[in-house]
Length: 160
Image (cartoon, rainbow, N blue to C red; front, side, top):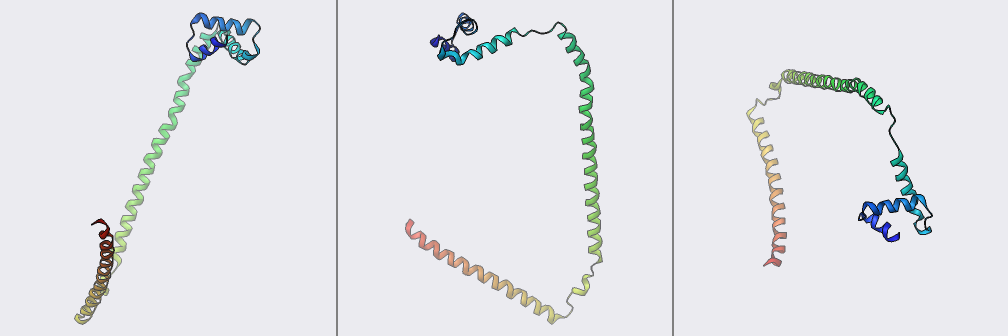
């Protein structure tokens, strides 16, 4: 029986051998070493003994007639979700358009003419300041690039 139970769990038993195992575990004395497998075979036998009631088909058909009502209830949230999605899109579109109109009104309200430089000397001075600032930033970038190139030259010595 030990060899047969091992063969059973490997899935290599024939129908006759499985019948022998069922009879052994359900009808007679079981060796103590194999007693752990007895509940498995008893469960299988109990499940096979279960039978459907005579009015099973009638009960099944009654439940199937109720099913369309359940399906209709499940479709209701989908329609609500569609309506909510359309409403959300409309609200976002309205807020976007309102923000765009507000931004255009604010831009139109700013009088840029008071910020314009009318004096030629002042315009020249502002231009010189801007060019000096640009030059200092470019010089910093050049110095940084030179430093990095020196580092690359040091590393390059190892690859030659």
